Figure (cartoon, rainbow, N blue to C red):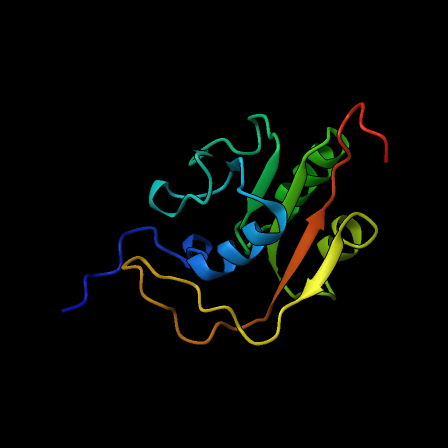
Length: 148
């Protein structure tokens, strides 16, 4: 029998499936920080369940921000990039939005995924077909003191 949906649960809390994170780790290495997660959905040894916009970001950052308002997280990714972090963000493919044009284009490498990501719900089971496709936006940071 399925558990009742927890109070306060929304699509902003959907978890990223492990296979997608493993594919990204194969390319970028293990993530150092997940600044926007629940404890049970963290994709890095260091993670923030609260205050991820105010706390420092470092190293390789995995970011699955709330899709209802990704802009502040993308602004933080741009700032972290300038400090040498590489931020790998999963985002809705909303290419017509202001946040996409102002905080993704010109700031990140964009990759389009084929098919829909099967996000995980509160029981760890796949969510039915999500409304929008997903892109990967990679904010490549340059290591300070390392030649380009």
